[in-house]
Image (cartoon, rainbow, N blue to C red; front, side, top):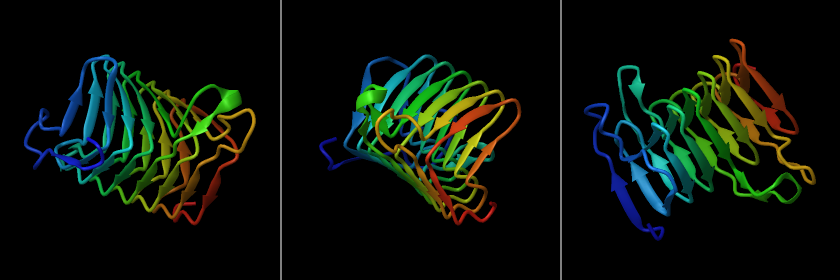
Length: 202
């Protein structure tokens, strides 16, 4: 995208109306403004993607379907770095159905490279990890979302902060309308070194 190109998904009309759909492996999406569609980016059906240095915004929903800035679904994986993910109808990022995502950093624990995302002003949660999925979340700013900052549910797991062996690697989770973090329904999380403040739900 070179930092100048825009991909406009238009209005949400069906389950196939996401701005970008990834079902292959080894895919990089970098330097775009991605706007509209049922979802900004969906990585699905065993897909694998690096999502780096984009603005992902204004995804729409149809009833309870869609509205995610980034949706990683059905045994897929994504590395999500350096993005601004904002103003989407539902979750900023959702990881679902036995999928995995790493958000905000690269490299091994002794030499982490911080590459944080800003996840803000989304219509439900900042990040939603559900249905037996997992995520590592470090260095990000998650703010002013209409629901929970980070939600982990339905048999899922998350490492929230504490991803580096050598330096602070927590997230800033503040100003969300729900709780800062929720972990429920047979899920588990390691929550280390984050700044969690001024969330209306607690």
